[in-house]
Length: 194
Image 1: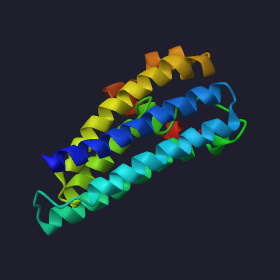
Image 2: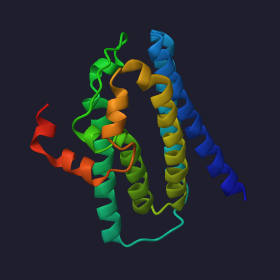
Image 3: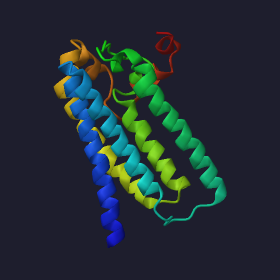
Image 4: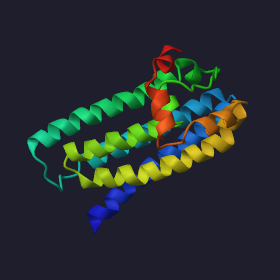
């Protein structure tokens, strides 16, 4: 029972990190330069801290070495996609002191409006297999639910205010799960030339 309560504490600490990300978004809207970075960095620290603590818990499942190697490779790929989507595609200008926001609708953002949610879940899912840690899988599920709530609020409270054409983007692109149309758009050459 003690082990379960410790895991829940780490999951809750990570949840607070997602709340801090939303506060960062709201402060960005109001151009609160210093405070927005405090919340962004604290939120990131809380998520990373919780992840490391959960990974360090004793393994509670067993998979063979081949499965572990494949899972590690996939976790690294999806983590790379997470960094690419959230930081590179969105652009450094978004994270500057005085942010210059521009709506990204191509690349991974043509697949879904919030590719980071998908990449984060898959990173944790395959990480849980590699580390033989079912607690990391539970974390992935809980944080994906919270992350989904976060992006719903982000769309309503922030993105619709930042971008006049966000409503059109919502109609053209699914939120989290790709569909046939978005998959076709995603793989076109024109999509990646912008």
